[in-house]
Image (cartoon, rainbow, N blue to C red):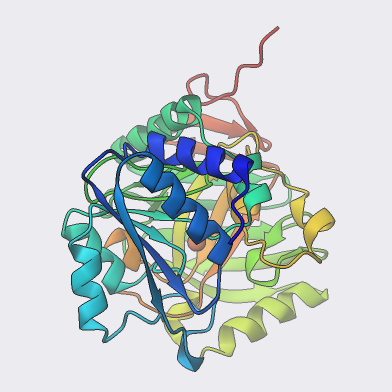
Length: 347
Ligand code: FE
């Protein structure tokens, strides 16, 4: 396979941020023929840094379709699990997020980096020390907070009680044993206490339905009681799309409110889908990470140690919201106003 010099350079820099060093074992996990060029380049980069590396390739199979969270080829594959748990670092190109298997590999002290975007997105959103600093600041604030509220002029006003669940940071690289991250990314998030989310969320045109890779075009009102969406209304098609998608899983837990946080990556683009929706292979990291979005979501909470493992997950990045932690303002009308997390552009 041909190796592009620029790809090798970018991936080597990424693995340097991840602290990959001689003597370490780095496993690149792939399924079928997916992401072969990225996998090959990551192994070349790991070799350059003196690590031992190989590609563990598994069959995805019918039941493990991309996009269905928590259903993947490692379920029941003991030998593959033992191998991954013996590594120092795993590059995940299969998508273990929200699975018990990912939690098990992390618990064995293995750091995991998920990489499931094409090279042009990895390069465009490449992480920095400053992004890590701002994401970690968000994590610290979320860990101390007992209440998160976000609201908008469009009618959103919802409150999360916090404290029951941990906070997870994603800044795009990982160098600590057992820590998971996602390249590229740029946000921290947590989960409301069980039964502790109440209010109303009004999705507006320009907010993003990540599961469909499309922008909301008609307002959708979600009424939330005790951590569950109890009513979805709206006169346009989007309310029907969301409702029929969730219902198709036949699982009432799909209506649970999932993780909450806000985007901090100034390199990520809100408009990305509008210019790349016809390109194959691009996932949703621009949409989840763009600076100033409130990342509202529905579905599972396994990732933060909860018990809801519904396969239905809806990420719904929202623009033009204001957000407070224990009354301290973080976002105002879609802009980061907290000085510790705001991007300061050089004069
Ligand atoms: Fe999500």
